[in-house]
Image (tube, rainbow, N blue to C red; front, side, top):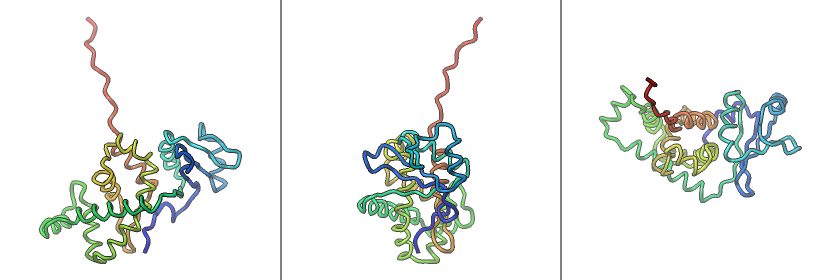
Length: 217
């Protein structure tokens, strides 16, 4: 069974796709009357193309995705990654899943009893793995690859990963996204739009503090 994106299965009020010409902008298209009305009335929401869509530069796309998330609009991502990118993502996901699984039986039981310190997702993965087996989990890694690439695009690509301290891609970004996957009875589920918002919140660098100055005497 393919991975299910809960945001896509629930509602899709905007479609979002990255430009395949130059790759430096995104197209946001409202597909419901409420979304179209909001886009018309919203302040500084992209550049209208006269055909009902809005062009947004890469620099501002993450902000607009966050904005739609805050407004509770559902988004369906449309991207066109090549097979090489999808295969690389799948292999990296499988590697991260194996790494998360590579613990002793004692540690695994401890996770179940007390999934503390961010290890709750690992306990969920362990439990699902025991239920469906290694072959099915490997298939899930392949199913999840396009979803992870949507998150990658939604965060802004390689430049943004560096800003968020999520490099290298295989050892930082992939495990960070894997931690947001929900392991349901039917398989993995991921709210792509919510994951993008959560990762920006969790990994954005703290603003620099202004230098303290001595009070005037």
